Each structure stands twice: as structure tokens, then as C-alpha cells.
Image 1: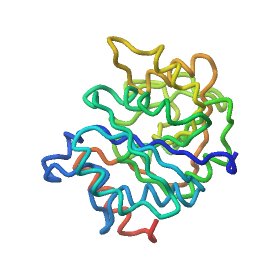
Image 2: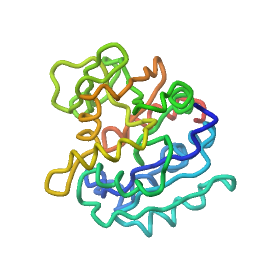
Image 3: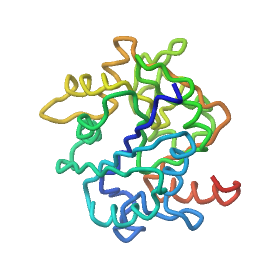
Image 4: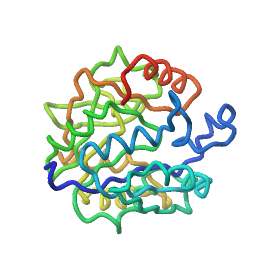
Length: 243
């Protein structure tokens, strides 16, 4: 698979309302951790994994976001901004905005998630092109904000159910995928009142047995969507060798 995945979609349309009070309205991908914007770490991991084109879905404060991220994109990578005017809606609508830009399996990640770079390579190398592949964390005791995490119930290597409010679960959604373009049809199917979340589409796809899990093992990741998770990410990265 690794020699065939050259595209990535990064969802970065939201306003980051839980962090705006402490970041002075800075778009989340530009928040600095250990002196580098979050986007710096994301784009670096994608580059190491062989991604060549990044489709960045923007929304709130898109001009500031693009001004900040463009200097961070390596010269051998292409940045394709995709604006979502309906950014107030859920993240499934943001992903649907990228539908016309990707025709083959692609990496999908969030603009506020940090990963050990090895995770991106792991997911690409182990992806099944006919499915949606989700990197999952089974180290439940290590999840910093478990209450807010997207929970997964699995059977063997398949996702059975997904949702933040699951009480019976055995893995956590890390927000990193390799998706078949078929995900777009499931998102359209999941729409209610012209809105849907990524989890809605993944849930429908899982019901058809088309969502595989890839266990990240001992690797580290962290979403950054609150002052507490931001502080945790800064604490961890300060103790790590540069990502």
C-alpha cells in the first residue's frame, strides 16, 4: 500500500472554541508545542510516510490558518486548501468537501492531533485499499481524557460500533485513518438535516464490515482540544526526542 498513498486530508475547519480563551483566537493547528505549531508535527509525519499532496479543509479563520501553515509545508509537498463554508456543521461535512479532490485511498487526520510519526507509516503499510482503516489505541488506561474520547467496540480486526458514549468498548479512535473513497458515499447516507459527523459515516461503514482496525501498540498520540489536553501534549513532547 505505501507506494500508492500519496494524498492526505487534514480536517481543520472548526473554531476550536474550547481553546480560544487560552490561544487568543489562534487556529488550533498553529498552537505551538515545544516551539513548533501542531501543523509542523502533522505535516512532518505525513512527509516521512511518503504523502505528496495535502488537502487541508479550512473553515473558521481560514486566512490566518493558511498564512500560518504555508511556510511549514516542505517544498516537495503540495498544499491544496479546500474551504468549507459550512464549518459550523459537524466534521463529516468537512470531509465531504474533499470528495472531489481524492480518487484513491488517502490518509485522513485531524488538524489538532499529534502522533509518533511511526504511526502514520504503520497505518499506510498495513492498510487494505478496499476498506476504511482506523488506527486504534487499545491502551485504555493511558488515555488522558477518556471521557471525551471516541470509543470503539471491535471484533477481531473490525470495528463493530463507534461512539463517545459507548459503555462497552475495547479501543479508542486516534483520529488517523487510511480511507477508501467509498467513505464519501457513507457520509452522504449518514446525513440528517444536511449534517453528519465522521463517526456517523464510519459507523454505517462498520455495520457493513468495512472498517478495519490497526493497533498502534505502544506508540503515542494526543488530541489537543482543551487547555488540559494542550498542557498534557506540551508535557509529553517536552520529554520526547523531536517528532
